[in-house]
Length: 397
Image 1: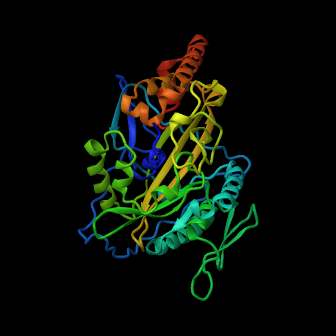
Image 2 (image 1 turned 90 degrees about the vertical axis):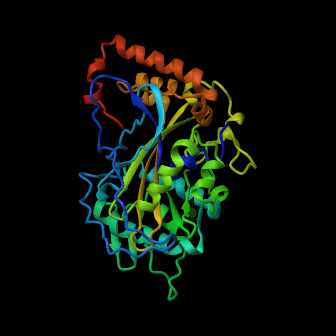
């Protein structure tokens, strides 16, 4: 059964339920290899000494165009037969922090509609997280004009979207008050959803700022103010206590401003809702779960939902900022890509019972696997060379 922590777990744990390819040939990874987080100096929990670190200037994204730059084809699944619970982080360059593409207008419109519809239910900042939210907004106003100069221009009071004409004032009035929640403003600048965790004196990290406009499966109002451990234990995360909790907490306490880490995940849904997966129930229902979704819908109703998440510590406030970019495609589209249907079918079959329940496999598994097997066989019949897969599309693509 789908819990309200279904998607939030993947956002905040910075952990991936990864499958491992059981093959004799070497696995090529791209764009980077898993990383160890550098150790930080000892400090008292809940107290952060502001860092003087500043990210290096970002080079412009090569030939970026709001009409021509396609979304990167993340396909973050691997062959079975094993599916292990393990860390799935990789270090990335600071300039690769945010990814924008030609779906920006679509996401921008969807977020604007969701803000009008849900407002503070989806965007909220607690007083103790306000400095961190402002810092994230300031980081965007520095980074985005450098990385995407054809879309963003820095101004005296903030940043201007050259495509939409919107101007964002991050200075505020004489008391520094902004016209809207800083997390909401920040979310309007990118295609990602955003979250900030704040460490308190008990050593726990709490969700105290968020802008979750395109979450799919979870609601900010349900988890706002919760500690990281509570979010996971309330969400029935598979093997959380046994394999995830200790490593996750160590990671949060050690991560430094000099680092940006990323991970990818994937889900399925049986409706076309980018903002909210309506098949699991109305967004304002007291409870939502896979039990309400229609089983074995035609494959045309199956969608592949993948997230590219980044995590970094903000140098001034010490808050841990997440960006969550959702990529959303019909299964019928990605199954046309070489190697994808066979690898995806193997990955789904590798899920154990706990992961299958967590991801709602009983709702869509039969139809999905039959279709993927058929498309895989079609590729084999036309002579697809399986021996070249790693050089053609290495993980996470």
